[in-house]
Length: 257
Ligand SMILES: [Zn+2]
Ligand SMILES: [Zn+2]
Image (cartoon, rainbow, N blue to C red; front, side, top):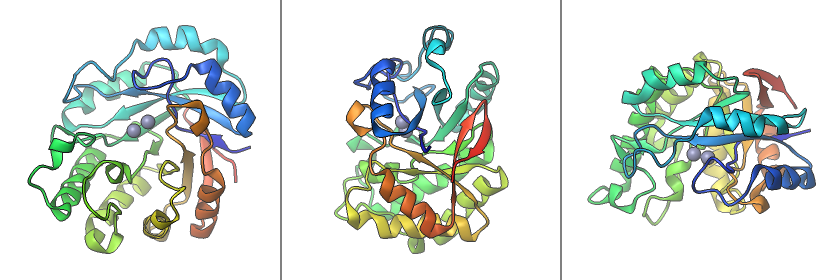
């Protein structure tokens, strides 16, 4: 069974489903699931927006755990939050910790104003430089979320990321992940659009070329209908790159395929 290793429910303020609804949808989609509620300390637009009561999370959602339902967290990385977040992660029995870039240089990647006055070239370079900075500092996670996150929001005509335009920075990102034995998430949110697949495939293949072995599949679902979205495409991409598909239980990597 494949696992959807990235989704949000009751403890993420931007989600539109409950854990019970997510479990039913995952079952219907024929996938296992890892819930990864948002944890972004000191979020620029609202410092408390993407945090939650983790004790309450385990108390309430713990009863749903099974061989196909696991509880994780998505940690938004920022250099000044690393120390506190490492402490937080170590205190709780997460199955999977997803490391994610949602901010760069204290600005929200989601916000249009973040790109004011920036060419795409500069915006992407800043995104990658900040990714390197975070990955050098923060190590307590299992998989690296949506490396194409910025593609969802940056306001340029061609929103794809091209390996060749920043080869050195991409290699630094991938080497840091490989040295830390992290899995690379194949995020499926954009994959229904076939035109985005070739540049992403190039990036995932480069991760493999440098010695990366493992990929997770993650929909980043906030709605039930997105759980397991485009998993056939993602699975095919993993196969094409020679990456093994994995998920995590009690922070241990389980190879699915
Ligand atoms: Zn995210
Ligand atoms: Zn997410």
